[in-house]
Image (cartoon, rainbow, N blue to C red; front, top):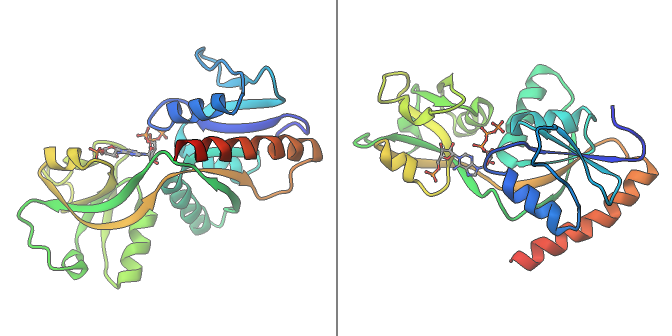
Length: 225
Ligand code: PRT
């Protein structure tokens, strides 16, 4: 569990959100060195520790109170919350503020030439995805049945090798879909990075640190607009 006096923030160790997250924290005035192999980095000029983990672990660490704050994509956050609810685990958190990086969309894409005539065309099909809960929610809302196969990477290759009829994956420029002969047919979730906070009240010293940090984060975001 966390200490009572040092705010612990979870961020992605390496990947698409890590550079922007690190840049944000530095622009907020935090002096940190995350270039070494240590997974828990101390901020030297504020009572803050940075825990560097996989993106997919961040929502759970915050929901379980292991970290006070986390910076993560809304896609990962929502998928984890739905999965934890399904399993009967604690899934509460506070979305403290949205951040202006990590923009992408979770979309359904089908092979070129697929005769798409609206969502009913997807009924009964099988999709490769890393986001089965978001896909299931979409299907339920639209009154269709879908099957899925879980892949944690290279999702776009699944239709070509006969693993699935289509995919449900993150898209930003659309170049990966195009390179793999796929066409986006439905956007099911729009995502950005967010700063999230544990639902349990913070200790007074930690709240004080957050009260200093949050306006700085919002200032940096505003300056970037
Ligand atoms: O850390 P961990 O390994 O658990 O997470 P991860 O595998 O999700 O890491 P990473 O670094 O790939 O993504 C981290 C987060 O960045 C995601 O959860 C999103 O919130 C955000 N993000 C923004 C993206 C993209 N854009 C994105 N384009 N995550 C992944 N992609 C992939 C997508 O899966 C596809 O393979 O990029 C490809 C498509 O890109 P375009 O530009 O060709 O459309």
